[in-house]
Structure formats: structure tokens, C-alpha cells
Length: 221
Image (cartoon, rainbow, N blue to C red):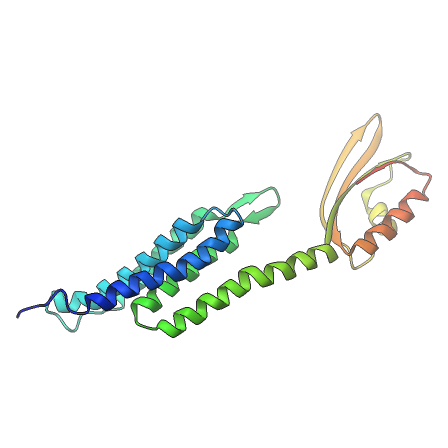
């Protein structure tokens, strides 16, 4: 059997270029925001996923085994990219960071596979949708963060009240969500650090209540 290894080469080169372009669009957004997986990483992942997919189509012909499972290589790519994504996720304090970048790497892998499968329109629509999520939804999230302000209060008491009473008296509003509590003893007095999230207006109402309490000798936030 004579195999023409150059058959379809022009289209395959176009597929690699298209995946590099689509990955580059998403990679620019990640690079602009200074994320761990930037322009080069995103482009390489997208192009590699496309190449793996092209090879999975070519392999049955090269091996002269038309019944070979052409989806096997692509499925291994999806599984393998999970290890790369896991390396991008890390914990900083009480927060987990890198989730969006990791899922973006996972998503561009799907785009690369789609390009390699000749689903060009679908891959371009997906790229546009991901960019919409990363850019426009990010602005919306930042707007919501203003509405959901995180603030840490350092409260020092004249009498050693329990933190339960402080929470009940000043931070009982359901719009404020308690994130963390830390307790200290300084100069024989209890000092509590409360980290809460909620609308700025509710934070201000809590501060007004605290400032009227003579039992509180120090307030920092």
C-alpha cells in the first residue's frame, strides 16, 4: 500500500496556524493579566492539542489499521492536561488561586482538538465565548466585589467579652458573611480579628455601632 504522507498537508498546516491564532487570542488576555500560563503556554497547548488530534486521524492510515480507535490519543490529551492544570492551582492563605487559568488551559485544549477535528466554526465561536467570559465577566465580578467588600476588624475590649457576643451585637446582619476569626490576648485584654464579607453600607453600619460602645477601647480595620 502506497501512502502519500503529504496528502492534506496544506490543510493540516492551516489547522496548526489557526489553533496558534485562537490560542494566541486567549493567551494575550492571560498574559495581560500577568497569569502563570501566559501567551506562549496557551499557544503551545492549543497547537499541541491540534497536532495530537491530526496524528490520531493519520495513525490508522499509517499503521494500515482502519479499525484503530482515532479518539484514543485525544482522550489521553484531555486526561494529561489535567496534570498541567493541577500545577497551576495553589493556595494562598484562605484563598485558592489559579483555578481560572487552569480551566482556561483545559478549555484551549478543547479548542485545539476541535480545530484538529476540522470543526473550525465551532472552535472560533468557543474562542469568542471564552474571551467574553474572561474579559467582560471579569469586569462584572470586580463590580460585584465592590458590593461584597472583604474587611478585617481588629477589636480590643475593655471587658473580656466573648467573640460570640461581639458577633451577635455588631455583625449579626445576614448580609455580612463571616470568613475567619482570630483571638489574641494583649495587655490582659482580649483582642479579636474578624474577617467579614458584605456590602460596604452594612460594614459602615457595623462600624457606627462599634464606635458607640464604650467597652471597645480600640478598633482598626
